[in-house]
Length: 236
Image (cartoon, rainbow, N blue to C red; front, side, top):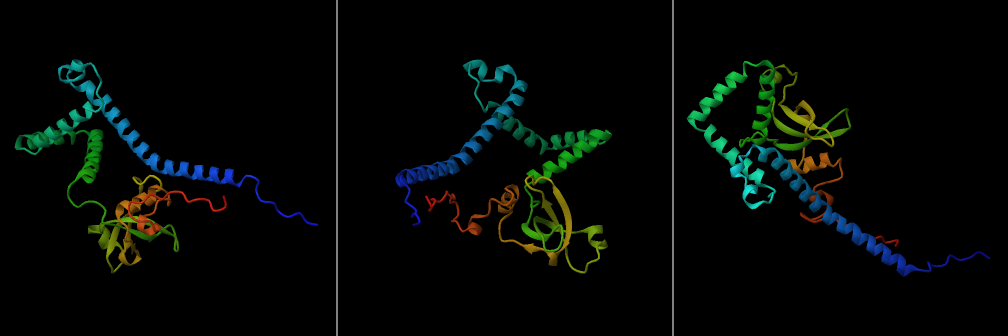
């Protein structure tokens, strides 16, 4: 006679353990992003203080008067100094000194290349004009039938647009790599080969950085701002 499967002798303990595990995972989902953000900000502030405070005259350092190393003082000095430099650079005298300095740097072969590259990156990142990516899209890469996320930058112009053998509009796109989106490929793609996405550039960037693990909230079926907490194990 076959032995019937008997129920677990401790179903209550298993259920309690499963509940504690799910609660712990839910807590990790809430705490981990907050803790990581606070840690990164705290570390960045300390790094800036270590670079800026040694350059500040001793009589201006509040540590000399209160005897306590206040974290973030270097950041305040850096912000004030940057604002002052920007205000001076926008004036007539500041623009004259800036042109003189750039002409001097332009005569130095190696320094000139480094300065021009750094200037272009800074102007692209911090410029207040509309020089950012327009929208996210899909393109076929590296072969037909395989798609990759890219960002539309602008229309192809000049020699590039004139020499490409297409009768339609050519679009300049940047295809980032995963998980480092600062590197990638500059591609010139016909408009008809581009699939435009409704998601924002920020959401597409998160998708690239997370290697496909973080989708926009509306795409994942969760309401905006909701945190996807672990679900209860039905088997437990």
